[in-house]
Image (cartoon, rainbow, N blue to C red; front, side, top):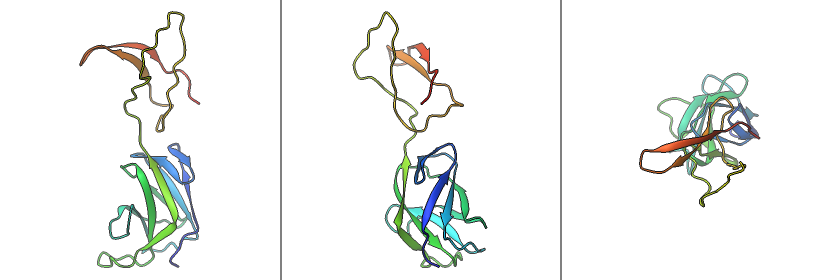
Length: 155
């Protein structure tokens, strides 16, 4: 078999069935794949000669992987992998995965907010985790800041 019907992302860092956060471990389930000791999955931005995150597929058509860089990737698939066989890969042009960046630093809003009565600042992005702590700070010098608040809700 040289094609896969669908892919489904499983895990905390999955945003949809076909999108997830960069640099985080996720599981992907491939429907209609043909698992064997020689079946492998990899990802590419343009052609299967340039693959990343190559993985052996298990008997439940699942891999655990991570892709480090954001972008749109195609799935590459082979059922006859050997280290010498670079031509046995088939690009699944009907399947694309979107890898979203992780927000390590958010600079928002662009204009100062003055609030003496309290208020709410909404921050949007992907890659947030409920197990991590986030704080809002004022930066007033190259290495000086003051913590204003800790994020208390996620939605």
